[in-house]
Length: 365
Image (tube, rainbow, N blue to C red):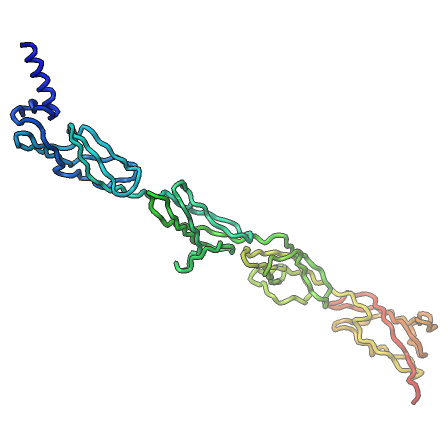
């Protein structure tokens, strides 16, 4: 009797797995499970790389020895699950129910590469080409082609040539991925800022009235650089700046505006002072005198405009001419130095001027 009870217990146990006899859950009369088939595939049939299958929605159809069938959910009844989602493509999922092994196919999609360019990148112009580096893991990247264009240019303007000049640029990276990953295109932007103009200075200048105004710019401009000089009276507003070079006596502000390709415009300032001129003999229109035996008439000397000969006119013989300093006009042939005081007026400094005249004899024909 004890042996019979043991055998019955074994039959019941095995029947629960559907191998010998279905003696569980009130199904003792169905007999052995003779077949198991997939009745309904799971709801999810597409998966990400390296993920795991989800059996929700899947159903199995179980056929018993008696000929009866039963449909049960995969979840909770599948006793084994085998899969490999490490490769993209069509992949097999193997499930086990008791001694029965079934398979169905799913699609494992390629993974996206998580790549980008950092935003807001800036460089300062230095004459070298500029680019950006991709951020993110490059482990699964086979090749990258970088292309560039001015930000405002059309998409057809992309080129592999590195940008050099100051400006805003778009960058495009065409990425070829390794197996199991999607090729991708990554875009970004960066700016090359103009460089500052350095090493240039503007010198102040003091000149006498009537002299050449030549304000000096010291240093070397960058290649292609130019500058504009402008002037205004010292007390005038900045709106009074003009490229007209001043000639009147006074103080002037000087502004130099410097520009060069790929450089910021720079402004330098200095001062120009125009003072009264110190008169010399060269400022007078002097003529030599033909000998007549009479005293010469210095009224023919023509001083600069606004200058007046005032007093203390002296004549002195020079260059071998014997004529001690005298207020009397010479009458003899020779070379003479004339000195006198002047009132310089508005443009010349008042003081003493020295010049040379000649009294000559015209040869007879």
